[in-house]
Image (cartoon, rainbow, N blue to C red):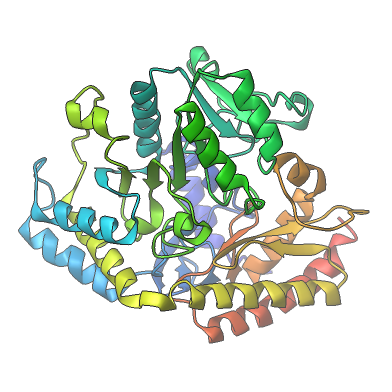
Length: 446
């Protein structure tokens, strides 16, 4: 039988002689049956080095809101490259990008640029501690905020180390973390406003900020229950804490002004990444003037040789101009396409007796593969997800989808981009039908 990933396998074997573990981000090693190597993409389509074509719903881990290789962005980067790639100084582009962010997001009174959202998270937490003079950050169990020491506290702890319902653990998934970092965090369960109030009360006067994804996209795409955003805002105002929205994924995807516009709240600081650069390494910290005061005064160090890189700024300006040009049509189109895809997957799964339950707003959603005997309903928090999601069965289906030319993220997350069209969704569902049929036939013997 022909190996459809033969060249990817050969390249991965070769890479392990020069690249640690053969990949440049640990999560990429999760891809089965082998980490794939790609040659080019166009719009919502992607081709690997073996010539396999995929309708792509991984879409650069969510970074490619505008699809693969949009011509306008490539042109903007190319024109800037002719003028210079890096000055470690100021250019007019950085003002133009900042002004566009102000126009899109009312809470973005001031802006600072970085090269990755992980850097921005570190900047935001440093700023919050300096602003309040307090040591602790409150985050939610299962939430991902970059791969640095601070961003991964409480991320995906194993079930036998969760801690009790009232006191979630502050475990870190990596070795080599500075031990004291864990002591600077408090972890609360997502989607339980009463529990959140109790956690804040227990640590009253010690918490500098509440850090959260407005929709917990990195873990099962869990939308906030009614009142949660209002509770966070109320507690932050009452206790003098900063409200920090990590919109690395949600930014620009659920509304031109991000999830904060869609859900109707105003954070003190916002973390932006992924879509803001359309696939180039670019990120931003935005915030209200008072929350940014310590940076303005110089009390908080925020630096970086490549901050405000002109190539990245040119790409971001194109992305933000494209968003502004869409007006009220965004995010309606991607929401409709996402819901159409979710409905189609749900109906196909039902036809084959597969317990697959997509959940999420549409522009992003997660396919929950429930375990036998599951009672159904939305997954609400990290513990609920671990108890109910059949990860091995989803992994098998994901390989079946891949082999039929549909690419979703390994952990079950799907993104719809502005490049996807109704015909792409229809074709993806035709391909998914074959994948679900194969999974239904094979899983019984696994």
